[in-house]
Image 1 (spheres, rainbow, N blue to C red):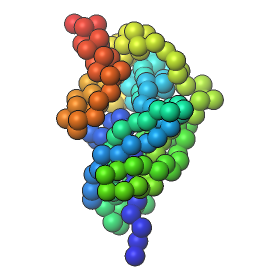
Image 2 (image 1 turned 30 degrees about the vertical axis):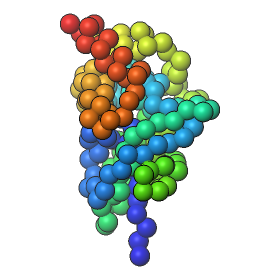
Image 3 (image 1 turned 120 degrees about the vertical axis):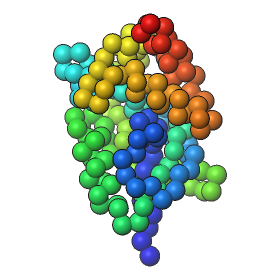
Length: 177
């Protein structure tokens, strides 16, 4: 019997996994928080004008709620290749396996976390600075603000509270006019 491959979505994977999903569960990663702590030079910004994307940043006592996706049986290799092409484009993310708590029990899930030693890491930016960057940046996958708004909207639909993202979504709306 094949073991289920799980993937943790905490940002755009929540609303755009781009792989066949057999099951979705609300999940929590302990010891990590969702943060706009990675400068995006490909998907939501450029080298000349970087945007910001979400990453899991290690933080004692923190947690990140998101979605655990069970990959459809038989699609594991294709899914892994697609995720690596998407998430490891600049090597700022580290591919790891994290234990996730779900209502149906713990699962081990593939997750992409920030490398705090990478040049694109920008943890500690205050929310106003994040909002100004997100309001103006755009990259190969579109406007940075659309990424923020989609993520915030989908978290709200799932009943997952994220006060920082909620504040950022409203502030970027105001800045964008």
